[in-house]
Picture (tube, rainbow, N blue to C red):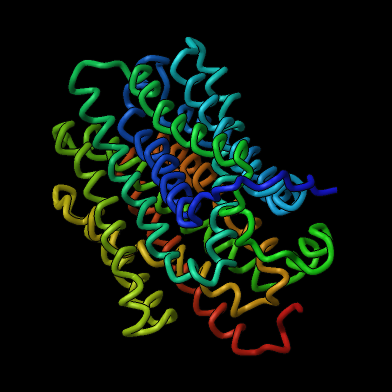
Length: 403
């Protein structure tokens, strides 16, 4: 049974503060994720790892993402969204602190599931909140733009702190403190029992389990999940591996390589902040078409011209609209009461790409060298384009959709 609401405060907090918490949550997640690519060579050196074995750090997060995929909508209905987000932020902070203090590689690998679960619940909960709030749904691009802000800051913070002779463990303490501020904000939200986060979520028709089962019968949901899984895999793999590709394989100076990763995320941030205007001008489907063409072009440049580092911000700009636009299209493609369950499933399954594809690239790189990474990303871009076009076609046949 859902927990009963507590007595409301006499002076309620303005509803927009819930939106501020959502934006900061995406910044904090992205800082935690974005810094890893810069820290990866130092972690490899500390534990004497190859690109294949260090990929276990990505792969270990998969279990958490899978659990989040099938539990986020259920727990949100029974615990309330604020409580779920609080638990998720605590798990993420715990994982980052463990990374900072453990002397054992095996512990880092094992604790990855907590990091994956925390990120999966945060991502699913906040996306569901935004999509189902009519006032905030138009800000979806801005929400994911704030993810880009955090992902831009993550490599910059890590590069700067490493340049100040801090160890990668000390950098993780800094990242944990940033996420810890989110814990404080959400704890305050739960203790005051303000409903600025939870009241915006559409109450599903029927129970959460039935809606999840119905959503999983929709080909649109599975097609979108596969598209977003590949997307997140490409997005995060570029962030995780580009620094190693440039410094280890191409002898780019470390500072330049580190800040080029920030430029990648800056391109993504600019693209998402401009997304609303682009949607008005050319529409969602054409925007996605343009994005995939730019993505293919950017990957070709990164592969063929190793020192043309402007290809990285171009890749960020190309990727910017794909995830939030896919989310925005979901209420148009499936029945309204299935949207919360579908969004929770999509975001968590998408996160599998961050671990699975990054890990797979690491294994291939250990065999064929780091230069193989841009090459392997090209067919993934082609598959995403095909999935996007199929979803656009399928959604124009309402009789095929699940109600």
